[in-house]
Length: 346
Ligand code: ADP
Image (cartoon, rainbow, N blue to C red):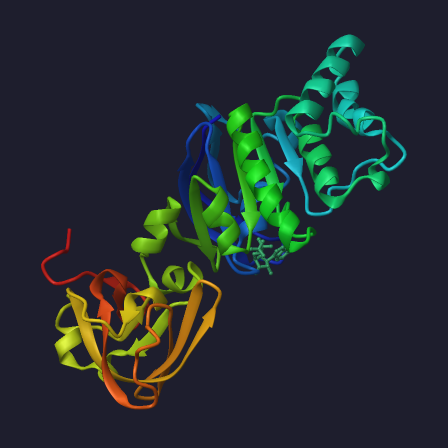
């Protein structure tokens, strides 16, 4: 089911508007991440989709239907929360059956559907167990099956992986993608973890201060950020930021507009000749290797930078020329808006 927000705002009862003019479309069958720092507006947006919160202004559509005034039940959404609260006294199978029992679906049908869902989420060998006998990942699988029981229009997941350890998070994020692709149900999940969003989502909505910073596919967000916030938030190691005056007009004149800062991706910086690139005088302090990864600490004037593509042949503690491949160099104005390369304004 397609989800559409038409100029939606949300003001909490304390009078503060926390979501401003949210205008977006989520296509049918997509897996979308709401990504951003704490307080950015992710949960509020999710709760507006679910119907747990009502929009202060604007309209929300599921397909062609205006659901703005409908509650969560009428909208037919399935939800999985961070603390996925399975019913502890029920077996796995009964947990999955429960929402169908409430909806008065007949016994044989609901049992068969629960068995199918248990298979889909790969807990079919666990159905007679109680939740407390399952691992965190298995409990999460059951929670997803339960949320899918009534064939929801939309599946919503609020920080579904945050209670799992690092290895399980990686396993479950692949599983969420698999289950979503197998069922085809439009799914929206909240995360503050950029790597999680980048690995799982078809599209990512980056939220900060209650505004959409950019809504794009993962690759475009990384390669073509709209602003400094997105460029900083996406990618690991974080973007290197240098003031424009440090690099001088030779660099700033490459861009259209008043350049305040330059951002450089860690992997764009190298001591080997690269074109097209910007050149800078720098001092490499240290090059460390971690398995197949490398990390160099560099200073350019008063700025400390991290580079992942500086080779161990770099001269240590001596001034030398480094290159930053232009594809990984972004210019921003004083408000953090991205400035295009001269001649590239669309
Ligand atoms: P996120 O999920 O990205 O952490 P939230 O959607 O929870 O962000 O919060 C967005 C903003 O709304 C924050 O400034 C938060 O303090 C505020 N907020 C959240 N819930 C309430 C509430 N019930 N009443 C008033 N303000 C709230």
